[in-house]
Image (tube, rainbow, N blue to C red; front, side, top):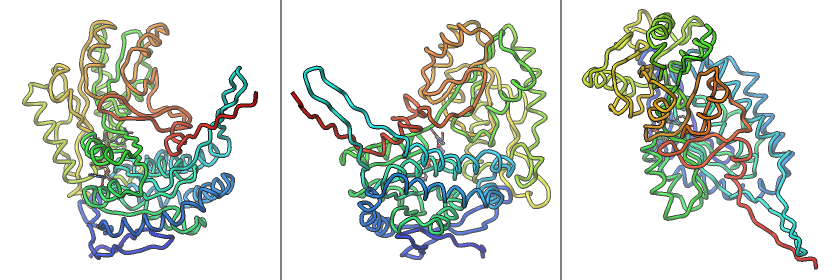
Length: 484
Ligand code: NAD
């Protein structure tokens, strides 16, 4: 019997699901159930929306300063329990605890603090007309909004949505992934301690097609901010469109990392290139899973790259020495293994990895895969077109800039690209021509929270981050006054 039962947060109180249905929550490193999370129904969602509807007018009328103070208080409470949050995130998702401690939880704190600061500094526009009139823009919160997040960066992406939604004065119905529900549940408890008015933040746990669908369908929910797979994004868009809901969709990717012969391939840069493929077991939407290398340096690069990949330590996520942990679920582990088998069938040569790993001791039944590098596949193979979302990178040689651009842009996705070059003109030329929402040059995952974040093509619709998120969660109204 699992020791922990998580709760929903509805109307400022922790609550069990009305139907008393529960989902098992697994520890990926051991394959064992360690908690249960509510399998909430449409009735739970309706109760949350009712609470949010009652709370929304008061929250919208609360001064931005006060809203910001509450977000800062929540950030303080999470920061004070950084180790506990990091351990829980690692246990729930399989990611190394060192990564959760260094990246996920501090970033969740930053998200809350960033939008707390952003809302008090936010300005509205004014447009003066020479003919004697002035326009100014009012931005009202939307009312009740839905925030639905995935399992790969659980608290990081959960807070990326709820922070701007709350800061701009909306009441929120939030749903973390049912695969990694734990840290959001703990945040819910702390939001009570922080003093948020009841109903302003509601967290309804459960499965996508039931709980998530009920949030998207509910007529009182005015907007949905969703991060997850392209397939789910399409289904959410189809459900939301007839009700004309505002939508922000942050979806999948098949990102290129492009290395030119003129790049400075210091040890540090090479480590970043390796990290860009394998951080969080490759389960980051921004990971570069297609590594394009200029033909003139291909062989020497491959040798140095493989030496570094082979040195990555896959192990118990709780151990500080582990670079990679377990894949998030049995289902996802099976999917990634199928993708590796498909790459073999397509004629790919496995240069390293390609197999599951059987660890010893408490991790004997965990879902581990060796970091895998594959070459010999053209860009139009399924392996190079479909998102794998695991520790799998393909190497592709290219001749020149035009070739690199054609391969990099030759995908249905458009989330992120990274480019390694010592030629500044090339960097600008390629930066302008790569069809991705984010282009990193001589770096990867360097994030400034003020910048627009999101993808094009099948990687999504809309942008989050900075004022883009505040704009999304508000409705602009232009007021035009004639004075002549
Ligand atoms: P997913 O689409 O299966 O689930 C994401 C969330 O949506 C979960 O909370 C899930 O319960 C919910 N959901 C599922 N079906 C739903 C429905 N019909 N209605 C409403 N909600 C529903 O994605 P996942 O497997 O959790 O996450 C991995 C995917 O997320 C990958 O494709 C990855 O690229 C993508 N991702 C994108 C970004 C980005 O910023 N673009 C960031 C992280 C992850």
